[in-house]
Image (cartoon, rainbow, N blue to C red):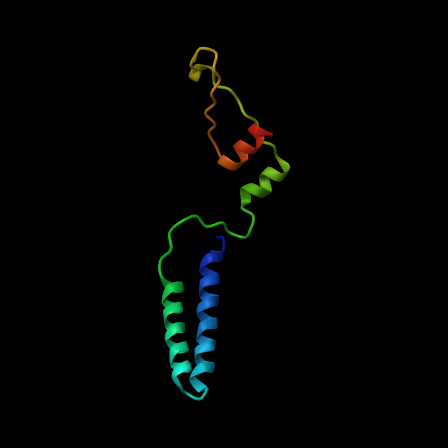
Length: 105
């Protein structure tokens, strides 16, 4: 099973926020330390909240390793050919990045 780097980074940030909170809690308390503790709580809530969107992990996927040594071959399926008046359009099925890199190269 691969490591979820995004989750690991969030957990590291939460741990660092905890260390800063401990340091600030032991410092002489005034308005600034109170504000800082509030800010740290808000920051921790933000880091813990659900995030949606694209995440690009900082490691190579297994397919990247395979593609570095093995070039995929595109094959035409004649039974799916549609005569479009001489215009050529392609439907590429497969890993998007690998397919596009090899088709556009």
